[in-house]
Image (cartoon, rainbow, N blue to C red; front, side, top):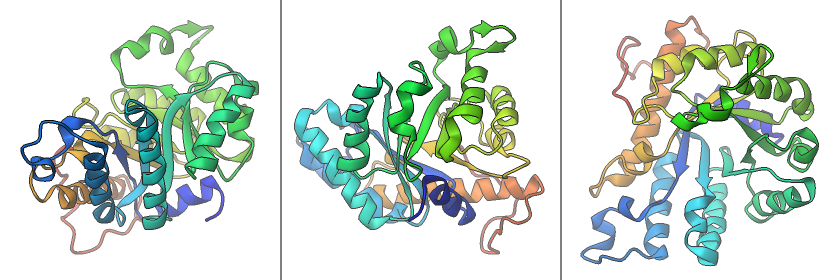
Length: 302
C-alpha cells in the first residue's frame, strides 16, 4: 500500500477525513447483544466491534485502537486487539490502522513496542510521547512505511501543566511541533496529535508544521468545534491533511439494534461536513456530490 504518508494522502484525496476509534468499555455494549446478562465477556466485545467495521469501511480514513482498554483484560484482551487488527486490515486495507499506545522509552525498550504494533498487530502507525527525545524515538521513525503520531497539544485540561510551559519565547507544545517538523520527519512518516479544544494553538502549530498530517481528537463531547478545527488545520501548502477522530460518538452512536449502521453514518456525516467546510474555505478541488446537503448546512456535533 506504499509509505505511511502515501496512505494518508490517498485517504484524504478520497475524502475520508474521519478516524474511527475503538475504545471499548463494558457500558458501550448494546443490550441487544448481551440481553439480560450483567457480565460482559470478551466475546461480547468482539461481536460488538466486528459488527461496527463493515459499515465504517467506506468512510474511515483511519481506524485507531486504544490498547489500554484491551490491556485491561489481560493477555486475552491483547489477543483480541491482534485479532481485530487483522479483521480491519482485511476489511479496510486502504485505511490507516493506528495503535494508540502513547509510548516512548529508551531505544531498546522502544523496539519492543515497534515489534508489537507493527510486526504482531500489522499496524500502519503508533502514537508516542516525545519526552525522551529524537534519539530514543529512532526505532519508531526509521521505517517510512510506518507512521508515528507524536503527542503535541492534547485536549485534556491538565495537559497545560507541562505543554503550556515556556522555554525562551515558545511553549513546550510549539517546541515539540518544531522539532518534529524540522528534525524528526526525515522519512516523511511523522504526524502530530493536537486536540480540537485549542483551535488558536492549532493554527500556530500549522504554521510551523504545514506538511505534517494531524490527528485531531476532542470534537463534540469534549467541547471542540468542527468548524474551528477544520479552519485551523488546513495548510496553505498541503491543504486538508488531517484526520478528525471520534470514539464515543462513533462506538455509541446508537444503543439500539441499528448501532452498527449508526456508527458508519456518524463517520459519513463527519466526512460530508469537512468537505462542506473546505468548500466554503475555497478548497474547490474537493468534490461534493449533488446528493449531499448544501454547503451551508453543517450537521449536528458528532
